[in-house]
Length: 469
Image (cartoon, rainbow, N blue to C red):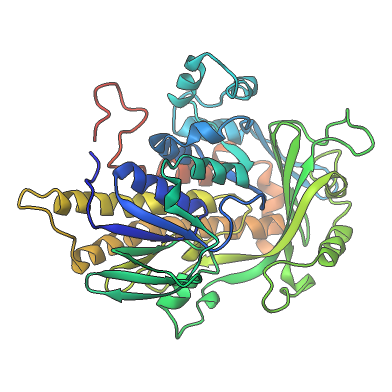
């Protein structure tokens, strides 16, 4: 049951994972909204995003996942190497994670690769009935899927940011950098780790200090073949490799036919933060970093130098991590923060984007039932009060905060392990290969298995006749 047309309107600041997922959810619920993104929406920028099965379930509910699944290759192996290409650990973690929430586990690569042009709908149906693998896809493809799933594209306003807001007992009014004033019932800041809405919510506090920056990350996309021999693959398709090396950790994923997504984590003591006002390092900084790590292996035979030679794009940025310990909403209950605006992980485990989707689930699981009670109440339609909205925001934060903290802490230790940045990491490295696969996969399986879904939408795996919530 959707919420009927009313005067309730959500203003979303930010058009990335959290903002676009929220926009899709609100459209599905029949709630009016407008999304403002100060840059382009779904730009051809960034590395790739890991998508856990639990996130695919949520996007199944929204009808989004069918747009981004092909041509992803499901994870089959997750191996760890040292800087010389020696094997530290081998496992089939990708398969086990797929089995954790869905029953059937991994879908064969050739099946997924055929989804985009397959005329047999049974293949897609079988995929969605419990066989959701762990995948990694291009960030731009993922965001385009979220953007293009929205029916009313007029609700999305690119290149228009928010420069101020006024909150009152009956709503919130934002002012944009184009001089427009937009009135709404609530404002949701989904505008990333450098959130303008967070700064406006706490004008007297430097909220950037809520995040720690210990590493920088060099991100790249490359062709999966040697520059001098296009017949030679640099990595096996479907493989995901982590590098454990003193002073630099690495990740390389051959998860799209013909491409490798890779990242290198480098402690900041080797290079200070970018100059004030810049959010990324210069090309000369990138060349200096890759020169120092040229011979570090991403697998047994290939190095990050090989990946750099085959690159199609690279960028290097500071790697923030942390969970904001200030309240995530305003005292009046009409301004809230979601996603990276309040919790940020390192990219080592790829949990950040999934955690952002979780936050949207928790927020709408509180908001949509409230709107159904008030706007469609038996005693007549009315707008929810600020006190009621305040309870919504508190309940959302109470549920999401421990989940965000878990993702941040797990990523914190993973990054320090792979860079051997702490004394304990050296000890763990020597025994890591002896640990059971179930132990290694536990962070992913626990995070995946305890994830929320949209309570107000049918679950895609519910038996026929029992899907209505």
